[in-house]
Image (cartoon, rainbow, N blue to C red; front, side):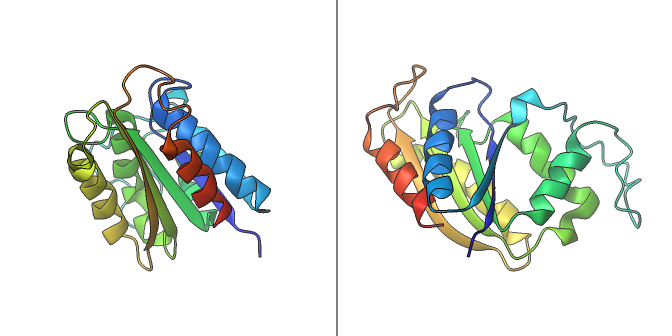
Length: 178
């Protein structure tokens, strides 16, 4: 059975290392017969949550930007892939703003399979643990969330350095198992 896969690439660098791994995951998932869409968060106009709670009871955010469209896609997806480079042992600001903005309809995002893609200049997986904790913290708020896999692209700083690493093969293979 084909699934709807939504990949949220938090990388601010187009064709940056985490973005490249997203493409490999997408290639594998598409070849397995799934419907795949990748959104480069940095290319969307998504402001930060202002905690005005105008959305309370309505599900409609007071900020008029690209978030409503992205949020609807998150609701319709069966699989969510969250990808971010490690920035000061956390996720990047673009993806964090998107996650925070789900507050308008957070109860509508449910029963999702989650995959995480993390890249870092540091070669040790320990450097990715706080970033993964951020992803997992969000998934803990999603009713019926199931973590299905993590792809670590470690020791990659320069754009494109992730090419020809084991993380590339893992991203493709994990995509094929969706």
